[in-house]
Length: 435
Image (tube, rainbow, N blue to C red; front, side, top):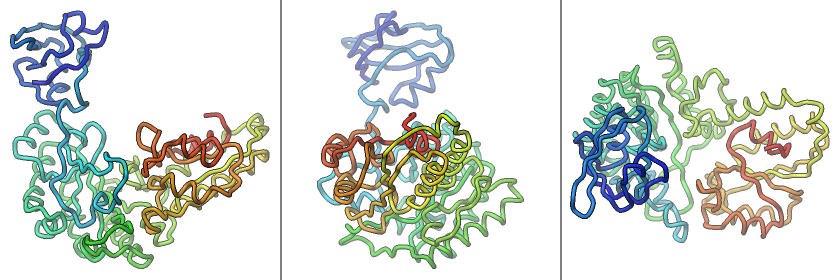
């Protein structure tokens, strides 16, 4: 059962007299333990809800629209505690965080429900047979899975979990029941790349058509790795090899499947100093949140909006600046130049922020801290407004990774800071001041 923390005014639950601090016991006789139970059994148009108040149970027969909510709020979005990660992966980024950051950054989640609700990647290692059966019964799809390797022994070694190998069988079971799977492989140099990566990609291809996409991303290595497994960062040559391998496997299956499925992340192309694949190559950009095709998508979105600019837009006068990570710096600079070629009254300085906080092997904008932003921009010409990627801030949009607030950064730099979504069209509108 789950405690109800609020009842929305005017909702079905409110009209029935259900109250705060009542307990939701069941829907149509099925026990409600978390948000998946709640959403799944709520979809019927005729339901019987069991509520407990002061130790006494009461049934409510309800007729409603298929997806209409009852108007109940619960203590957490999951209606339960988050499931923590039981692994000790050799590449875990959280293990590489220094002390003193926001407390929530140290939480390791590995929750299948968050995968369904928010697209989080899970390892499957804390799931039991009954959890897989529930996913199949409720047809929770897609499921995003951190595979890393299909070699059972190597997976156990990389994740320091004796169940890591056996839970690979869940992939076949989910696939057999039509559950769509997006897979992720965090590549660790000389560990699960090379021949092991070939094996993993070929094994995953057997799951098609349930397999939707596979992203191969490099392990993030910060300067805070004392006492951890000695990972080697990728360089130009080793990144080249990963890209060649992934593209070769992709070509092998593209004709058979009629689409591209295997993708190396943008970081590999940047480290290898190679041109990104075309817009068409990335299909529906299913691995965008994994950094796969993000730069190409950004460029295409920006170009479309730039081409649509009018004579009125050309008159806009702005004095602004942009701060971004090393990875996106060249592309951002190119987009800014294209805008300025049409809107000649827009003055914009683009600044590359090196990641002194985590180490210079970290080049993505999303891991730039407020400390580095201030230290590297304090004496720069920032104009009237500074544009940054919204990914630098937590979801509420108010704090950097280091705990510094957006307001504090604005005060230190003496300029208005505007976070922009990682979307090329939004970025161009941000330059124009029309967001």
